[in-house]
Structure formats: structure tokens, C-alpha cells
Length: 200
Image 1: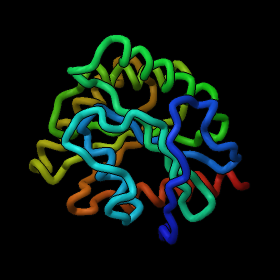
Image 2 (image 1 turned 60 degrees about the vertical axis):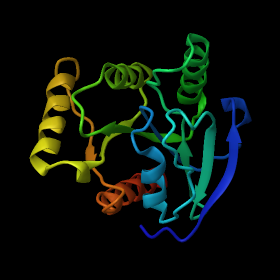
Image 3 (image 1 turned 90 degrees about the vertical axis):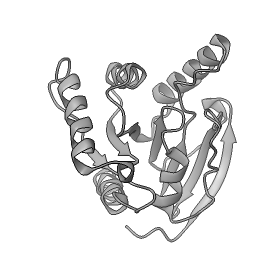
Image 4 (image 1 turned 180 degrees about the horizontal axis):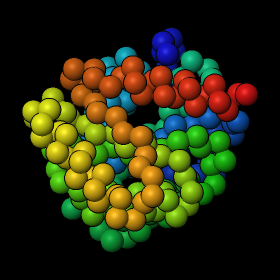
């Protein structure tokens, strides 16, 4: 897939305010500082489409970007911040759950995971939530350029082992590096294939 156009459409605090559309949506989410904004900018080939920050939890809104006029990329607020009140966490959980349950055009969730860490409880809990809600998802391992291929493969294997304790089938997985633009073609091809299936 070639990204010819990537346009910011809106930022919203609730799912009710999100754009009314039948175009498929692909939502990106992960722990704070997982490299989500950098990945989105890499995928769209726009250096400043999604705002990057070294401050965890910068994305607090549901951000919609229209891609090539035929699908939406959705930047969702991250989770796992250490310095956030319980009230803020509860508000996030309510907003995200409402989005996942109510967006009928949600085609797939891309769950970003830092490849440098062992399986995190917050990631596993979010995977469980997606399964409970019946939302299609894939795993995207980020920052693979920060370590050896062996280390990345060990991290992926650890997640597979953990997931197989409760899942019969494993989701599709992508290895990415925003610095090296690794995984870009694979993710865009995946989105294109899902769009093709949806249009049949």
C-alpha cells in the first residue's frame, strides 16, 4: 500500500464524538512510551502526523486520521502510566472500553509492545479485554533496533508462551523499528488485505 494522503480529522474525549463514518478503522494502542507516535509517523511517512513526546501518557484523546480517503488510523490513549491518579486511569478505561464496544467499523486493533521487556501484566490484561470483547487484534513489537535480533525473538517467544496458556490461537505478530522503518510494508499490506476482504 502506498500512503498518498494522511489527514488529521479530529481529537475526541468520548466515542460518541468520534466521526460518523462507515470506513474501516485501525486503532493503535499500547503502554505509555511504547513508541506509538513514532510508529504512526513511520507508517504514514509523515514526520509530525502524531505528536511524539518523552512524557508518558501524552495522548489523552481518541485521535482520528483519514488515510487515502478510504480508511482511518486511530491513535488511542496509552496505558500503564505510573504517575497517574486512579480517577484518570478509571476514566481512560471507561473511554477505551466504550470505543472498543461501540465502534462498529473497528476492523482491527494494533497492540504495541516494547520488544525489550518481558511480558507485562498491563499488556496481558489488555489482550484479555480484547478477547473478552471479541475485537480482532494483532501484536506489534516495537523498538527492535534497540537490541539484537535474538533478544527480540526471545521476547516474542515469551509472549507466545504466555498467551498459549489461555489462547488456542495466536494473533498475527509484527516486528517493527520506527528508526529503520522495519515492518512498515508488512503492516500496510496487512491493512490493505483486511480492507480488500471487507469490500467483498
